[in-house]
Length: 269
Image: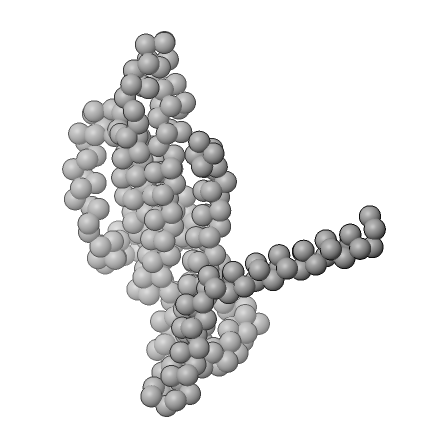
């Protein structure tokens, strides 16, 4: 390749990178504005810097927590609970939702329970869960499981019920068994709704993870937020809060990328 061509390619790559950076900044401009307003309010004296510490103080506290290992250990405990509860909820919720949509007996048994439990705030069950399971990991995992279960059930049920019945009848008339219809027709057709429910459940897992650890935990990010706040270490408390928010954001973006890759056939269609 000639030197002039190489320079042209490099210039095009450079402009493409610049456009990508500008697009990224524009996309997250509200976050940058919020951080700037946060810093200005703290420096203006309208709010005490002890109650609203600056970004620099929060960053320093974050580095201290990271170097001491306290943040890593508690984050691992929290995320392992959230992942376990969420994983169980996805497996059980998908199964129950699909069975409710395709088996009248399951719909009769589970539909009233889902309607009763769905609008109930799951954090209201913390005292009861604490009595049943104690203060160990089981109580937090069960609460996360229960909160994440219902969105997955409802999304799987709605997705399966929305499958065109003529396709199901055609497959049945051609000799497909009920298991084949469920596996090869209903499940792929309901997958977009199921993944949407799983994404909602992912957000619920972070909410319930922190709220349960506030009350019934001796470690974890929720416990760390409460203990730092009680001790008056507000920069470190905000550092943990922003860590939870950032981790949830990254998890949601990764899951969104997975969904886009998994459902690329739908966009092509």
